[in-house]
Image (cartoon, rainbow, N blue to C red):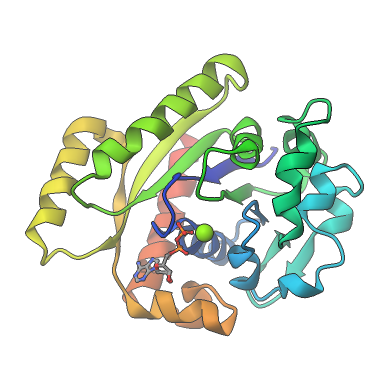
Length: 257
Ligand code: ADP
Ligand code: MG
C-alpha cells in the first residue's frame, strides 16, 4: 500500500491550517501510522511547530521543488513528534518565481512524493494561505484536501474560491483530487452564530463535514512556542484529544475512499 496524500488548504490565513497539519500528523503517528509532513509555506510554521529549526535546515522542500534534492535526502525525523518532516523556510518564497520558468512545474512535488510513497501511510501537506503555484503543487500531488474552517459569518462564501480551484485542478490536472472534508476548528459552542454556521455547513456539504469538531483551546495555541504540536505538548488538553479523534476519523475515512 502506498501513502494517501492530503493537502491541508484554505486560502485564508489564520484559519488553523498549520495547527491542523501538525496535530493531525502527531495524532496519526500516535495511532501507529507512518507519516511524512511537508511544509509548503515559506513561513515555515509547520516546520518550527514540529521541533525542526527552519534556519538550520540543510535542505528543504525548496530543493525538492527545484530538483536539486530528493525527499529522501531532504527530510528530517522529528523524534519527539514521531513523524518525518520535509521542512521549509524563506528560500521557498523564491521558488514561486523560479518555478515559472521550469518544465512540469506543477508536477514536481507529485513526482518527488511518488519516490517515497511506499514508506508512509499518510503524507500531509501544509499549504500557504493563497492559491499560488506552491498550493497548486500541493493540490496536484494529493488524493484529497482537508479544509479547516472557522464557523464564522462569511465562512461559506470564503469556500467558493477554494471549491472552484479544486474543481479546476480535478478537471485539468489531477483526476484523483477531491475534498475529503471540512474540519470545524476553533469551535466555541457557546457562540450561537458558530452553531448556526455549523448547521449550515452540514446542510450544504453533508457528510463532507467531519464528525470531529476541534474546540478553541489555548493549549493548542501555546504548543508551537515549545516547538511541539498540542497533541505532543499536552496530550490531555481538550484540543489535543480532539485532534487524536480526528486522526482516527481520517484513518476510517480513507478505508472508504
Ligand atoms: P494558518 O496556518 O491557517 O495560518 P494557524 O494554524 O497558524 O493558521 O492558526 C492561527 C492561529 O490560531 C495560531 O496562533 C494558532 O495557534 C491558533 N489556533 C489554531 N487552532 C486553534 C484552536 N483550536 N484553539 C486555539 N487557538 C488555535
Ligand atoms: Mg499556516
